[in-house]
Image: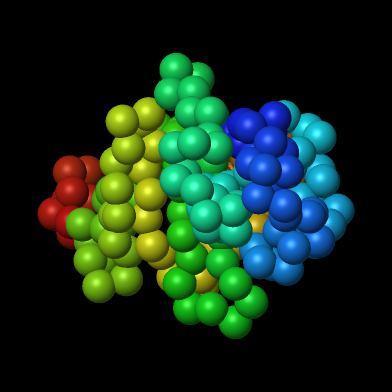
Length: 163
């Protein structure tokens, strides 16, 4: 979702609210607030909700939803928190979250599947990892492929019995 920046500025002016007051109310830095206003209004759902609360208006009045081409994926959490909020529009991540929620319902809860196709869920922060891809040589790739083929050949269909 995006902020209707012109409408938001008009609301601020009508209510006599300064950027400093909005920043104090929302916890945004002045840099972040001005970046949102000057770069298309892109912000997370939580930030948009905070901006609506800061001006005491309904969220629908200040957002510009565009369900036809939602491409947002995001994970938000506060320092030292145990739970993160994850929002995905990309199919492979939505499928993964659904499987995790089914397998670990106490740790992963799906909060909403929105009409725009996004999935919103709570996940443990410890599940959030940033891992660069492995750089394997062609020889290492070939060795791994051979090992996988050997395992499949030796185990046959028994590998499915473990599930």
